[in-house]
Image (cartoon, rainbow, N blue to C red):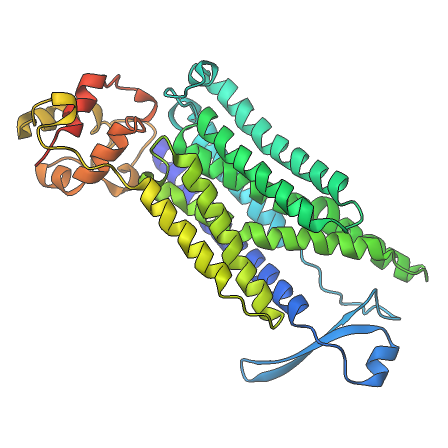
Length: 400
């Protein structure tokens, strides 16, 4: 019953997380589009009152006229729209999901017993939890310091972009060394998502509050607040597509269950940023098909890197091809504790990923996935059933 309750709470949190993320990302993408679609105001009275740009649009049977001020209008309306709770709700619900799934079972989901770093392979559960929290916090601190030190006046954003890109490569590599592949992809996405939410909480909203306060006091707003908010907002829009990919990657073990997972992760991060760049430029009237083309090229490269190697006839390392009885025995010993219609493992009320390996037909239907996750040592999770190298070789030699 306890595992069922946890699963149900997990479902509701996922639903909330997705709803909040859709609302936040949708609004963020819209305002980036609006910013890049602005044109100089045609009416003289608009220019005189400080309108920086405008956009006319039609949607849902109505016409809209958006205007942006260089700093602020002469008088603020009482019903000023703010955008922040969607960002906070997305992060809070995502962190809650991480806690109830990963941090409740750290030895199962976080600790990487196959890490090349012995200290990481030997982490206890509470140590893995602390490391994961430090990873999230450290990612934000490093990113924030890069922004403050490289481009404090928002005049060296190109160099800052390169620095952040290098940082994400390092984050991807470190995550795959310190955590399981599944957790590594999620935590790398969470590092970016944390930076996005923290940008809103620490920079964008406080800057906007200072601007509003100055207006109400009859003072001129500090234009640096607006520029800094715009800088962090632009960063957020480039993080968006990579974060979405890394969050859904948990459903596809082939992406993270091999030794080059960090390279695949980096390729997808850069591909997402390039595709987003295409849309950013397109809204400004500058269509550059090279960006999505290069992004697709990176995705194809990721496909090649992540592709499973074909088993040679005769088995792995000279092991004879096993028969049905051998495979069934190994599956029974190492898999069905979790992958059954009624899992025996206390952490599951239903088979993970919907794989119930109770019958030979089901086992055959998932042959490719089984071989890949066993060969990569991703399964059994944490090697809790102590699968030996010899048993892994038998799975690898399985032909039919």
